[in-house]
Image (cartoon, rainbow, N blue to C red):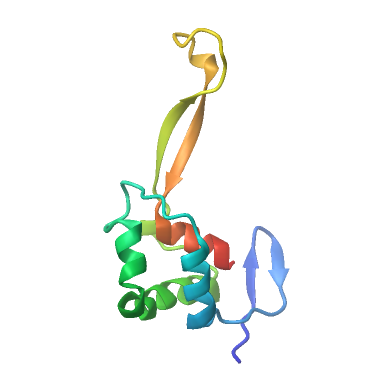
Length: 112
């Protein structure tokens, strides 16, 4: 078992366990299969090809968590307005922003 020290938002983790391929696979399979336009391939395809893609995803997840850094390419999101009130749709105050993240971004977040 490998343990790592890292700092996130001013809080220190005294130990961190590497995410195993088996745990990572279970996490991915349990997640919603919603697709984001930022994803290079549809989420359902990623899940179908998981045995082949798991080593790469594992490197991304564990590398990010080990170093305490989130890859720049995963920091992008699509922000879209969502109507929140029953009032006039013309009034911009009746909308809230909704951020759509890539699937791999959500996987890293779930593993953290």
